Amino acid sequence: MKDMFEETIERVLTDLVTPELIAAAEEGAWPQALWQAIEENGLAVAATPEAQGGVGGSWHDAFVLVRAAGRHAAPVPLAETLLVNWLLGLAGLDAAPGTATFATATGSMDQGRFSGTLNEVPWGRSAGHILAASGGESPMLVLLPCSDATISEALNTAREPRDTLVFDAVEPLASAPFPTGLPTDALLLGGAMIRSAQIAGGLARLLDTAIDYANQRTQFGRPIGKFQVIQHQLAQLAEQTAISAAAAETAFAASEQAPDSLTIAAAKAVASEASGQGAAIAHAVLGAIGFTYEHSLHFTTRRLWSWRSEFGSHTHWSQQIGSTLCEGGSRNLWPILTSA
Image: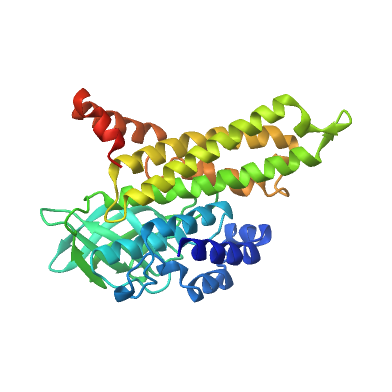
């Protein structure tokens, strides 16, 4: 099923995601034809059990979909919707219809109604539903209609919506206690996991773009890709791309039943560090043309700069890894490192 997902998503995104589409989306246009194609192919519910209205693929299978969304800079909440529907499936709830997003901040439940302020919500203005968590002694997952929220619009560096949604005593469309084994910070971990895969996809796009340019751009009578210094930079970019993809896919594979804290922390730390290095190398190879708005390179690099700090920066997740290893002690170091 993984190969089928990859073939389908690459066909859809290659056909429909163009620089013109991304530029229009950054100005506020909603790419309806793109999202319709995603829904028609069942990609938004790819990792949701069939009993809950999904396709029945595994979460590991969904890795290729999230990576492709990052590779093509798809201006739709595909990664967010996949995560929401996967978590709903783990909780025994039906998939959310249409677009969906999530929030890492918690709210409160009072007499069956949810209240709370949810900040920096990805695609908040564009999503039909949002998955959030209520705090307290018995935390719950709640699915809410975004139309019932007061929305304050904001954008990240890539001009993707990162809005504030305020809910005041809203009745959830669906709710369930956190499933056994699901960490209470599952939404934060899930967000870090999908961003790591998107970054891996974005780095792959940078690598292809830099290699193509280095083979076409000539200087002193030969392609600049023939110069050792450029080859060295491209090798470094290839290295960062490979380790980011490997770390992100490991996190997806280890999180089949619930988000795995250690592998996700490692994936996001690696991807966040690689995104900065990768963007710097790509711009160095392309030179001045890569900084122009007319060239499509910035659609990827601005997303990498945004995604690397969302749902925990490199520093945040590195500290989490260090704390986990130190708490386990020296005797448990090797078992922890090899447990995934």
